[in-house]
Length: 633
Picture (cartoon, rainbow, N blue to C red):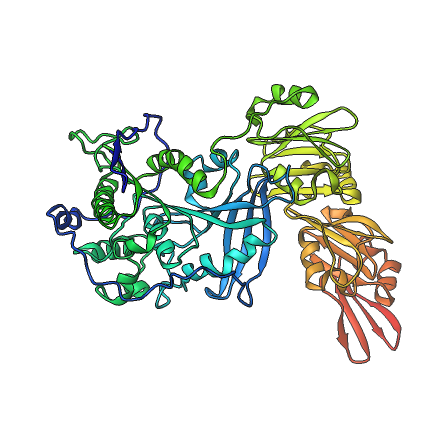
């Protein structure tokens, strides 16, 4: 049933429609014995709340010292990953953002935030919301900035009392003190915030607003554990945390029954949620449309998910009863079936959106739009790009329109081409049509080897593979890469963006099998393989070799060499890679016929001897003493 507490209005809950099963993650196995005491009616109040909460108006959030953005990766044109240095946790924390629908068309606008909290088995690479649900596509037409903290397995998004299992969890401080100034700065986010969490995140979605009055306007708990101090619950939480990563709940909140357990119990904090728009949902634990039946009526094969959802239902009921008793309204959804699993949380995300949108003051549905002209033709030719999100609008030198799964750019030459996905993210990071790449000249295409994808642009290209990500290649570096055979040549795909060389004017770009360097005097040249290894050992362009003057040149017996400002590096299968400095040793080796003469390839670098230097070769060595070079067999 769906119940609006406080208003005494009850309506039938919508049941999610069946669909094909999908990959999903559940919380750790919880023994049925942990459920039994709660079923028996032992949901008691627990210890009294021990820490008073300041209910005064919130003040402006100031960034603590040391809170900076270490790195920014554009994953798509409106999906970005930030690594935020957290002094509280002593490490960079990844936060992914799904940027608002009008992010591009209204570059001066600011947007409310929706924090999306993960479950107990949160991964360190990506939020479960984007791995397991359609959250990215769903929010594409919503005018909010979605905030997806990454990591925090078994953390409950709390500030822990002690470090544990190699982690220094201080999530409440990070989410409410350190992160907001970053979001409100370059990422154009307002102080209007909502929070939605599932399971562990559902628990946090209720205690974080209660502990931080005024911070959130909306709080949604999907299958959350909403009383943590009642009989059996600390033990259930300990069991689940141990199973999900080997964490100890006593490092989080101390001994069960202590002040910190009470200070994070949504049930005991319920009166602090006055004024927050609340949404609480849970299933019954019985087999639902997204579960595989076990053969026992009402019991699915997701046994752990069944037990956990029963815990969620019981604690949610106790929490909702408390809200009703103290007169705080909430939208409460009790689904007639369903286990503790992602398809139900995706369903509830769609259900709660109108309430969340109203709480944050944004429209529930997108404005009407249509695609016409050249952009309309491109959209019709590529229906994968989805429906339009904005009208067509002007950008530098042309027009653009945003769609659910990408953007279509139309330049003054009349061509309209889509840019999407990771390539769209790299294009956005490079400045889009106003940046150095200019407008796209092709749609996205597959590479001949079937491994990657690319778009060509007026002044460069962006190449992507699952292993390397998306990176732009342009200018003289792109010309040299193309001359060598593009991704089918010896360098493979780009693995990094072009960057300036440190200490000397020039640029370098990394590829799978080496790098391309460019300098004003010598142009663009590749260094790769074991020659690159030796170049690195000698200090790259800042060492005595300087910038490369050639790419690899083949010589006898399968050998190769690069010429540099200060000398060469030679490699052969038998001798390895060694440098030969320009000067007397090199001149003597040259007079003996280089690697084709009696000395052969070098087998070591130059080293000092009394009065001079020596370098060894396959067929002898060269000494330079008192500036006199001597070739010895």
